[in-house]
Length: 371
Figure 1 (cartoon, helix red, strand yellow):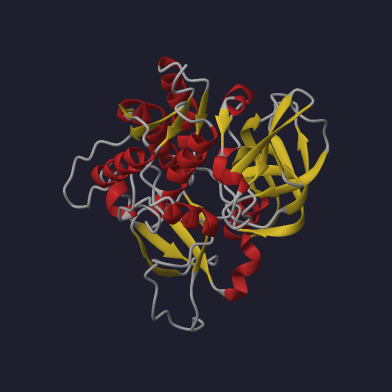
Figure 2: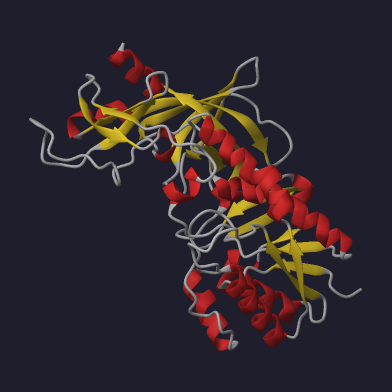
């Protein structure tokens, strides 16, 4: 059967080299699929989707494989973007890349690959997989600087079993060299950033199109007003840039950062270096749990965890309450534990799974200080 493997083609170098490597290993059994997941409804930003699909088509032409195109904009809106907005309305800071991988790249995409008769899907993620005792494990990518297992912790066994990650076995410079060697036009294309599938938009302007801003006061932990915020949804714990605070009497000549959000008063609480201890916490709670093995581990679980992408692994102990919520206690205090973000668990190179952070002892201490 032809097209046994469908590669998610983004028009970037990682997915392009993934397709090339698979085509070399499985001649005439590989095809690409370009996912359009966002309908541009404005002209204020450059639309990269047209450029990306042209790049994906050029790569497929070069490799001699077919490129399928699918519009998943409705699914993206219903299952990713709506939850993204809902989380912001709750005052949390969601991770759209994790939502996108869970709902689109390893669910909707896999369903459409089934429709095309494929056995496997492939992506350009920097991760690996291994089979152990009849179970599939998600492993960190060989390139520790590019490892993307943090973003894939929400996938399940049946999805992992049918997924391939060709560039997870090599490092980024080698990927670009391989693309150049093959004459792929995207070999020096800039890596994409910004919101998953939406791109590099000015975040505050973009979010204000969907959620009504609610300006309020910026205050110190003692309640001194030092500025005005544009809406609590635009800020995250630990943020230093874009606060617009300056010329505060008796303040230190150094940057301010976000300590917490007081939603009941619509206040953004900020501090300086003498308040750094207020965003250090040992403990968090989390729900929306996914264990990649499909089975919960034995508790207490001694492992490592990350609370943000590219953070070094942190030693911790994980327990679970009767209501199913996880409690994670870190050996060393963590900076800026943020509700809505994910905590992802590891044992060495194996990603065990993860959960969404609901609260932490950082917020408890800040609320006590204000009371």
